[in-house]
Length: 158
Image (cartoon, rainbow, N blue to C red; front, side, top):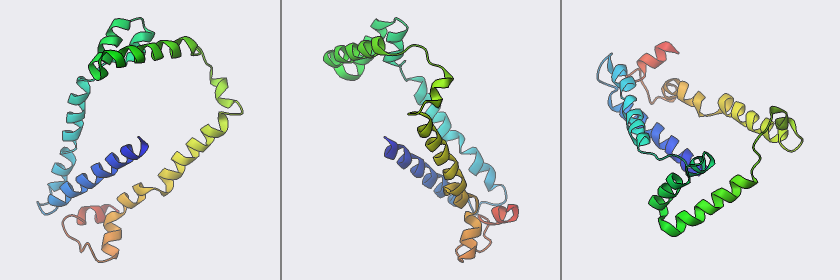
């Protein structure tokens, strides 16, 4: 699932750059189209999210077992729905209801939190964001971008 998420992010970035490149020679106001077209995938995602059902686990937790069963039947049939519902009920009966922030500082959890935060910070400091921010400068330095209308606004801002 992590690899699929990363693939979709990189594919989105590629499509965005290709669309922006296609608008590169449309004049000084092309950036407005580049910026505005970002609404399209967001709108599609929003419309798709409207059709998403509630989480069956949440429905069982709040006492709406029939609604959860109906959703599970829609995705996998009667046998799947009954098996999933029994698994959900068993995990909910065994789960801890209340936790506190002090549990984050326990010996087995705190190092994992520090590693997670450290990786996120390191990714922002040394990740692809830097390449994206300085891509026009990088392309110009290797001779691939000779002050075209695509690179010019970015180079002036940098």
